[in-house]
Length: 181
Image (cartoon, rainbow, N blue to C red; front, side, top):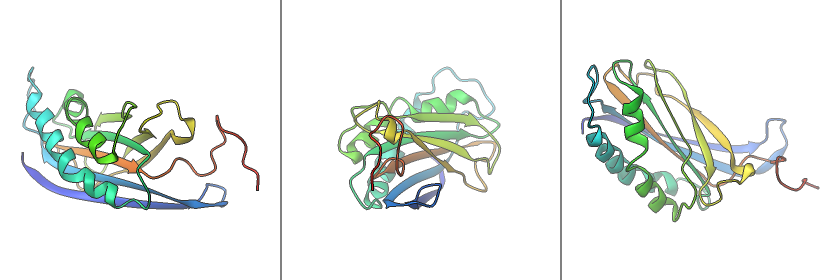
């Protein structure tokens, strides 16, 4: 694996979009920029990318979870593939082996890990979906966090993104009882 760099973003939400205060919600995204060994070529066997993502998940997820204020309740993953690559390269990074280290870091993970992948130029943002780690239909936890790295992915790179949160949306009102103050 040729790792160029890692980057971690920690966001603390203290109000909803209308300015109404909420208990702080922390969302952390750990990202890694790696060289895509398959850039510019069609390859049937993408399994080497499975191992790269599994290794990166094991390396980065414990630190991401440690940056939360409370226990992790939501998670998600995403990949941005440089323009010399293929969407399947992103799929190979986020699907077969990344889930195991993510679930280990959050202490469970009964629900599927929401994911997103795309091919794009350096500096392109991606919406990393978040969902409850154990309850796939918890509407209060359906969310996204938009992330990017200014100089990545280069055409022959992949940006792997893994997100965790210690809460859902502030003041959720879809599928939950109304808030009364």
